[in-house]
Image (cartoon, rainbow, N blue to C red; front, side):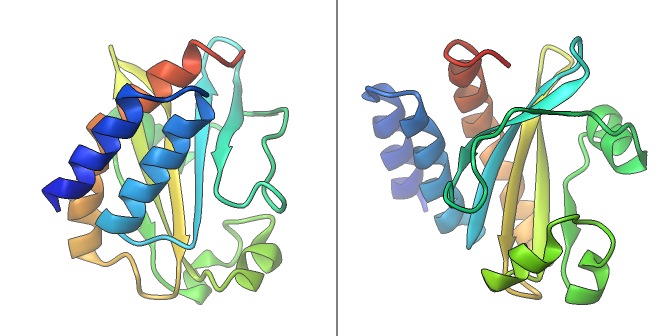
Length: 163
């Protein structure tokens, strides 16, 4: 596994385009927890919105404009407890994703959301989706290993995107 982290670090050290940092994190996440669909969502609390800043499937889940932050229990748990949230079945996904039918066309019936914080500020989330049952307790524990690499990526992206 450590070779995957070294590969990530090398890609981070030598990127030409900041989007390459998201792709490097995507590759690392594929090795650490497994993913079919991978996005990064930056959070701007002052402006009250989120913005997708990386997508493994930009043709389907494009880098769009902003969406308002929904201050629900899930968001507050990410913000205050830094809780990694996993949904592991098609039934659990019902009602949680407005674009669920599109997600399912990619073979995804499980998701994991990983909050990324620095300086007591929620920078964004890693959003990974895969086949049903993919994100059990072991995957959730491994997902925490992505937080430090993701912090570097979000800080780089903040310097290149208007969030």
